Amino acid sequence: MKIKDIKNNIEKILDNNKAQSITTINLENKSYIADYMIIASGTSSRHLQSLSEILVNELKKLGIDNCRIEGKDSKDWKLVDAHDVIIHIFHPEKREFYDLEKMWSEEIPKERATL
Image (cartoon, rainbow, N blue to C red; front, top):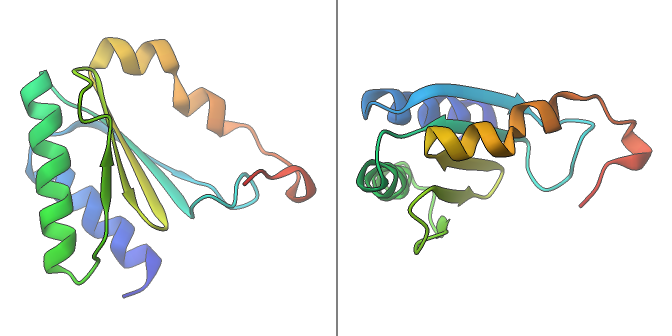
């Protein structure tokens, strides 16, 4: 499966499970950690947990194994590492506080891209 198809599937899974304000950032020329970063909001701590677990299960069905959930003890944030796509799921207040969209919107010269 191509990385763009994986990204599209993740966006669809999040949307189908009522994630809010789904934003995708292309990390090309910004970082080598992944090809895309997807940021979404959930409505409650339980919703954040459900979204992260559903995402991992659905990706496994698509043949994308070994995805990890970080922030299992956090009530405000979860990160799903889907290899070439990183998904942040925030409580809206924490998302506004960290403002990853602004942080990653700036173009970075390729020679300065970080690992």
